Amino acid sequence: MDETSGRRTKCSICKQGGHYRNTCPQNTEIAQQGRRHLEEAGPVDESVLTEQHLHRSSFITTEGYRGVQFIEHGRKLNQWELDHPAVLDLLRQSGFYYISRLRRLQLDQALLGALIERWRRETQTFHFRHGEMTITLQDVAVISGLRVDGAPVTGTTVYPWPDICQALLGVVPDDIRAGQIRLDWIYQQFHHLHLDAPAGLVAATARAYILYQIGCSLFPNPTGYRVHLKWLPLIADFDACGALAWGAAALAYLYRALGSAALKGKVECCCFATLVQIWAWDHLHVGRPTSVGAVADMADCPMGCRYDI
Image (cartoon, rainbow, N blue to C red):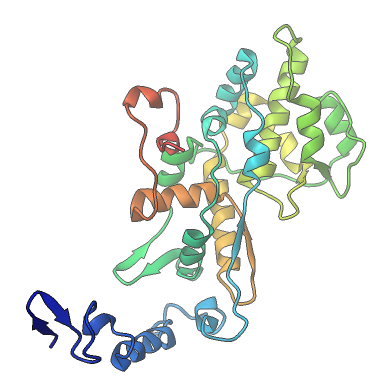
């Protein structure tokens, strides 16, 4: 027990004031409990979590352990502010209007790093002491506004890329490598559009923005400066594009990225990290900012926009 002298409490271990035995640096029992928790980071029964020997939680206490750096090219995406009415109409038609309203966050690497250490790809869930939690299709739809039902996002990667670019973007990039083009080229070529621009250029700009959104955030490339043209045929027709389950595809890509990053030796996770962070704010309430003041501020926005950031 701790001793009370007048109004001052003394630690029963070191006999010093200002703290209790549970926080005493000389309390070896607490230190041993902490070490035991680290040593027992994995499951007691491995019949479900069969990849514990590969999971990063088995190596947290080893020398040279490195955490995971989450990568999302949000700064690139936030610099493109859309205000052309005709482009916004096409984004609505294609299902990308609401996601265009969601600004990307400055990532909380400590929060995301703590989450990845608890992600298990065997169950596609985060494992906490109180149970399991995961990011669902409903979370994707509510936070981002992307469609989660509809036709699957699939296709081929074999196309004559210069011809595809000419037909759908109206211009051929000068640096197509392995079917990929530079994100900076897309931004410089299409970010400024006059109000009296012809319909063909408006459509090309809308496709370019969707491709830019895909390359920066939904399906990002770790290099941070290229996006694959395989997505372009899927956004050729805006009505057909709007019928695709882009939210389900983004979640599947996220699951795969989290599963890979949760393994030992991985040092980066390139994914839709803004979705993960807002989900954590919604469900775990750790380090989240204040919400917007009124419901009116949320008009025509997905719920991921409700934080004052």
